[in-house]
Length: 508
Image (cartoon, rainbow, N blue to C red; front, side, top):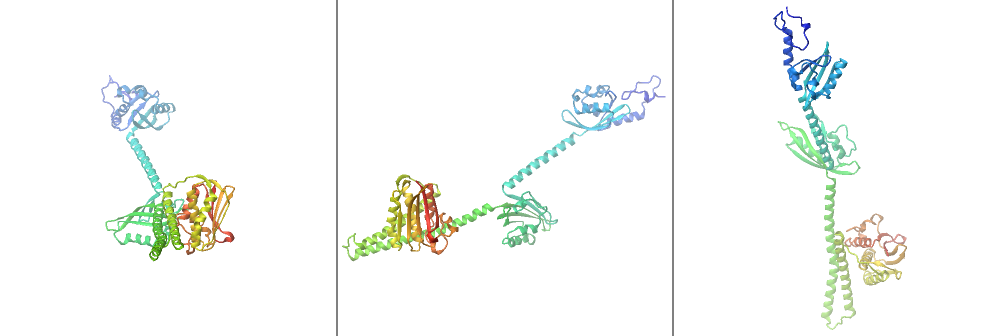
């Protein structure tokens, strides 16, 4: 008979029996064979943590030969385990004699899933190498993080461009849309769902028929892509312009299955486009007005020159100072002054546009300057049948640009003569607490309250035939000149609500 198995030390090789040469027990051989063919690492520890039995896989993971490992604590045979999770958890299991399951790592980059089970007086340790699984999981997490960052960056790009992407599955009716899509349509928060009907409801009523017809072509033709431009109500309540560019994906039979596209807010682009169109219209109107305004004095000048020639032909001895000659020369002088004023305004508009309107300040008598300009304009007023009156406080002295202040008064006087309806025009100069106040009043139709700020803009005039005419530059130049003196100009109704009174306040 063979020696009893119970007399053998677990994990040790049986010593040969001197009294019997019977072979090793078949069940024990099968157990050893099973351990060696296991993919998992196996260790059996005694109560003091010494290795009783191990397989080749365990020895390979610990980097120690199996014969050297047996009879020692694993962390003694492999000092690299000291202080690591595997060491701490095995010591705890030896003390508690409780089953445990945990993850542990071995240097340099090996991950183990470890199960510990007390069996009799032994502690069986089974470890599975899950390094590939952990690396794959880490790769998945890294990839997810990369895609998440990419998605966040993509969303930032979409938000910065005021853009969104969408996709409609025509078979299921499901609509995917990026964050910010619903906001483009005027919804402050994303809606639970989005439908084609909701899209149509968001459109401006004037744009809806055209967009519906365009979408219908997706089903009635082989169209592969289309672009729609339409208005929707924005979050702030105003209408905004969107453009949607889409591609149509079809099945083998040519039926549309998916429509995928991007939406871009082009409100600023549209506003710029409309502003450019308005600028072109204003320019064309200005050129037409400029041609008319320049033609009028030129025609008058040509007529006066012809009449002077005729006088010379009729009587070659007519003296230059003859009243008839002087009348023609005065008319020519008025025409030239008018052309000069028009030319100055045109040049100043160009200078203002480029920030080159210059000022030369000197100390002078503003009263004398206003009196001089009024006197020079009296001939124009008589020709227009207008009574020009002035009330000028004497010796109003200060620092100002003589040419610019003269330009302000000339433009205001020409404006009053043009739009005063033939009624008297008054000029007033007086001191006030902040400096000097210059007022030019007419008794024309006046300036509606809604237009009292707008008329000082370039190319702007009061609407209506009663105040038609001119280039719409005079008052624009007036404001620029006054603001260059750190003053202000404004218009109010005249006394009794009649006509218009233009006030110029200049610091002295």
